[in-house]
Length: 152
Image (cartoon, rainbow, N blue to C red):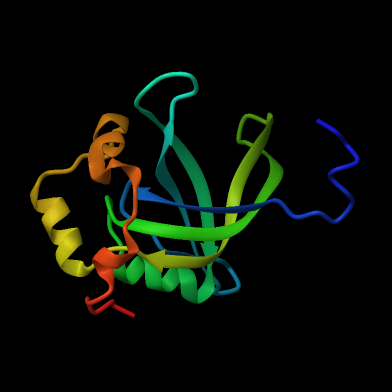
């Protein structure tokens, strides 16, 4: 990688959409801030092959964004995220240093209606990579959702 491209203070941004891998679990910090950590299953084209593969992206949301996610979203919900990529390290219980790359979310976009979420769940969608790689073919048609009432 050409190091001259990345300058000090450059922020790597991530924008994407996918389905929640599991139900959102809202937590509170000691200071009372709301937070959620979640995984997003995101389809991508296989390099040099036909078909798709799935990436699982770890994301973190805070405050009102986290509260809205806890209130309205469930496993399998189709959402869009915008945020920046952050890297951090911490010591686990065994004393080893663990490195984490995650998206620090600053915006969430609800991409399906409550009715759409219920239909998805009624079909028995499971949170595994095969199921996610086949759902919605990984493409979002914004015209499909223009006339619905969103929960926010």
